[in-house]
Image (cartoon, rainbow, N blue to C red; front, side, top):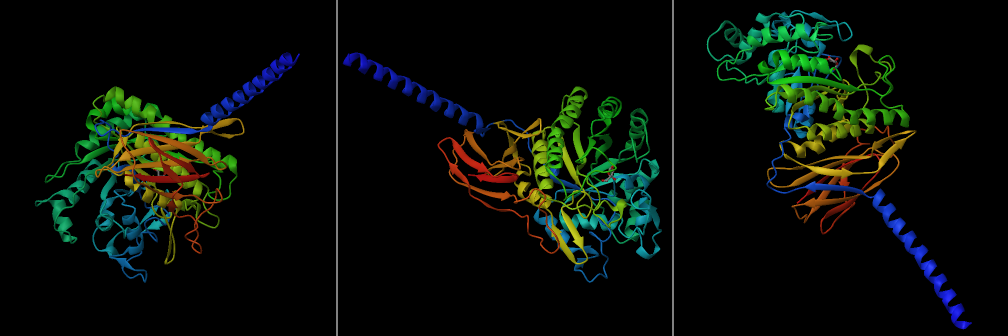
Length: 528
Ligand code: AHR
């Protein structure tokens, strides 16, 4: 009897033990499921591509207060300047290591006649900036001023020529004016205007959005014009031009197909533009700062969709250019919202919040992944327009959350992309889900590894377990950009609400490191 009871008790204990084991196993397995895993291939002998620093390029147009009342305040301004260009803006952009600057447009480029912007300023003719607010343009910021700005910034100039309303001769003479060293009509004119030595000019765009504001052309028609115009964009005096054909907007893959087919052999780069807005309605795009989670999610979804846009344009280019000679140049990209109230609707002045930082971090991570094909990208637009780095009000200036991302990510400039595999939990909103984490891993020329990580989930922190293959981490340091609220932003009264801070929530492990990414944060780790 006793033995029978003992057996029952024993069996019951066994059963309880069995149940507990199952629970433990489930807990472990659940934990494994929610644990985010990143494997970085950090072997030294990898043949992966270099992330061109030009992926961190900028675009500045004669639009609103980007040039005038932005960079350009004139020599007589009380705001400290060097030959009319604002010193505080130059210094901030130098700190973020701006590599290349595209100018003068945009839509403005195909209405711009460069000869109106040279010579004594008081003699320069005025024009109407029809695209952007119908304001009078006095041409005080022209070729010399732009190239002076690039010299002050220490960055490469990228000039976009006029196909839509310009002539072949006008385009040819512009390049001659800037780059010809000997005696020639244009080089002599340049000397009369005070510049003896030519400038170096590598990047030249042959038109902008020629399917739209640049002339409303069909791809075949533009391809022919591209072939014609580019013929006269000459390499003078040892200067070699990298010719960039005007490319598609977003998902216009036909444009890329036709351009590659008809003119691919005559270009160094082909552009593409990709803007993202919260509502898919250009009439009511949504506010830059007053938004709910639906609009946060919408921007994150479209930022991640960059991958599809780039993959499909790249696949077309791969077919026509298997040697990978032609670069994909994302020369306009960024967020686009309704303008701030009480500002000129044609000036495209918008605030910039933590949401823009996450969008920029995510899109830059995607561009980095495609660095085998993407040779340049230019965010629109540097000062006071669209997803700006810098906002100004009189003598005041603030750095936006997007600026801080460009500065934090500058560690990837010209670094070797490291391949990686990331498995992460989803960020769910209503019925739709997105991967909650995205990243880039790179190794710079000194051997230091950097990992940029975005957690786009506004609610949940993410534990991440990272395995570094082929590299033993000895020391890690980190920086983070985050805030309490999705729409946190910097104002002229409180310019430092969103700024990078030191990040130390990580542990070195035997195989790599673990870290916890706070909700809606961008973290950059430096691993030695
Ligand atoms: O960046 C603003 C405008 O957007 C540019 O001028 C044009 O190229 C694009 O449509």
